[in-house]
Image (tube, rainbow, N blue to C red; front, side, top):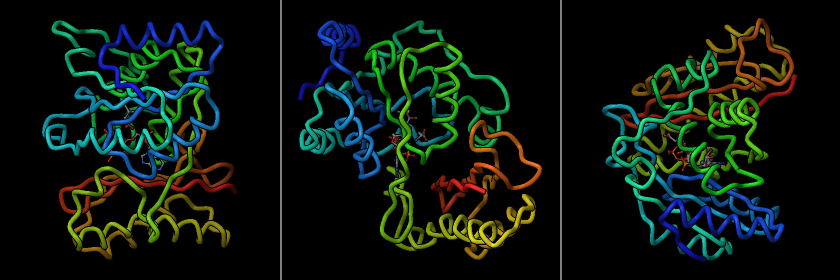
Amino acid sequence: MRVIERASEMQTLVLNYKKEGKIIGLVPTMGYLHAGHMALVKKARAMCDLVIVSIFVNPIQFGQGEDFDIYPRDLERDLKLLIDEEVDFVFHPAVGEMYPPGYSTYVEVEGEITSKMCGASRPGHFRGVTTVVSKLFHICLPDYAFFGQKDAQQVTIIEKMVRELNFPVKIVRVPIVREEDGLAMSSRNVYLNPQEREDALVLYRALKHAEKLIAEGERDVDFVKQEMEKVIKMVPYAVIDYIEIVRAEDLGALDKIEGQVLLALAVKIGKTRLIDNLLVEV
Ligand SMILES: Nc1ncnc2c1ncn2[C@@H]1O[C@H](COP(=O)(O)OP(=O)(O)OP(=O)(O)O)[C@@H](O)[C@H]1O
Ligand SMILES: CC(C)(CO)[C@@H](O)C(=O)[O-]
Ligand code: BAL
């Protein structure tokens, strides 16, 4: 496995592999890898000849006062995990390599898909994500790129960007990997103290409660959202950012619960903002 820090070197290497007809897979990450990331890597390894994992904590997707500076980083540990999965290349650029002085080109998906849910509480976040993902696609030229369903809004936006900008890449969604007790794996889980770790289970509990109501025949969007809210409020220090029930395909609003539906929420447990979601087919 080789670690590449320069965009031009990465692109040249990939172009050579492409000439040989190799299928390239890219797994974009911000590092501090866990079993959720590794599920993406394993999927890429199973589908592609050449696997590239990018590790880059992208400053432009963090807002003022967010956790860019303290975001967990441990490159040595990440590299060991990736060697074990037989990854070919790790693309690990410095911030100045991706955004040199004077940088001013951005890719933005407009509309409700980016302005609601995580986009409402993190203005500019998805513009940062679509910009860096576009750059990674141009640098790594993947045939397949792998994203987690945990960030459901992110992957839906990236699929739209790929369609609308005609990127020659196929997006592969990988299901959420959870801890045994149901908590969705996330690099940010390390911020939680033992009490908060316990309280964080409330996200999954609210989602499972909603799923049960829907399985029993409930179709009223507002009623199910209120029920989810009641579950979250059982944890005194949980602060709801949003609870949404939307069409899974495009995150559009629903009159009633039918079709492929995404139950999604973001909740602050102490200082840590956690997201989770569940897909339901009605
Ligand atoms: N539990 C998980 N299951 C499946 N995919 C995941 C999981 N956690 C993260 N991913 C995916 O891994 C990719 C990289 O995510 P990222 O590096 O931001 O990790 P993260 O754990 O989601 O971190 P954060 O705490 O920033 O949300 C994304 O496509 C994300 O959806
Ligand atoms: C896709 C991504 C690597 C872009 O920085 C990031 O948003 C993430 O880790 O989900
Ligand atoms: N997993 C999404 C990256 C972020 O929260 O900034």
